[in-house]
Image 1 (cartoon, rainbow, N blue to C red):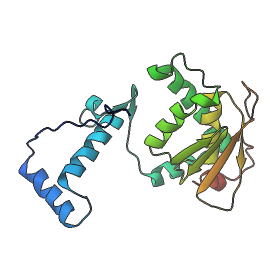
Image 2: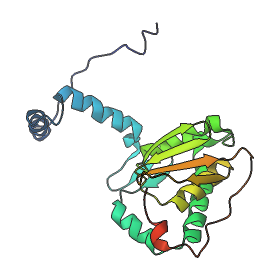
Image 3: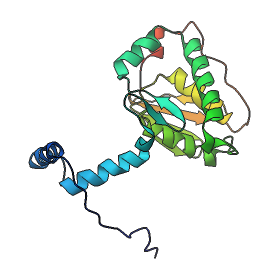
Image 4: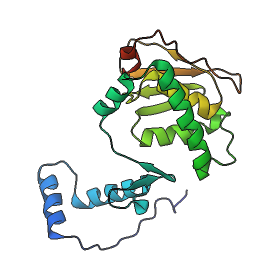
Length: 200
């Protein structure tokens, strides 16, 4: 049994009166289990989102600047674009991400065993709840339209994906083909912009 992973250390931290009252309020309303639990959770998020690299009004993750944008504004932006434009923009974003992210250097993303490195980042960034089984990718409550997901993942993994439609409105299933290095054709411009902007 690995005892190191279960090993814990104690430390004492002084916080402001304002933060203490805030935690007390959350605790009384049973929004948090305890002040200590809230502090541990906050530190986990601090680590996950690399808050050590943040500056006031300037947030960075994985070497790139990130912004907090509500989904409504994002959907309005996509609504003004065609499916082809969305697909192309997503491919460009993915290729740039691969070049700028030092964690991806030397990683063969055409192998589906390595896809989780990208999918975990997408999940962490709030794209949706993402899971994978071999070459099947499931995205629940996606904040982005399907053409964007297709363009981004196909450029990242060098693999064609096909959407498997379900009766569950908030679930998107993308099936990756076995062939490597393939690219799917961009969605037809005849498709409705409204369809492109639906987040599944």
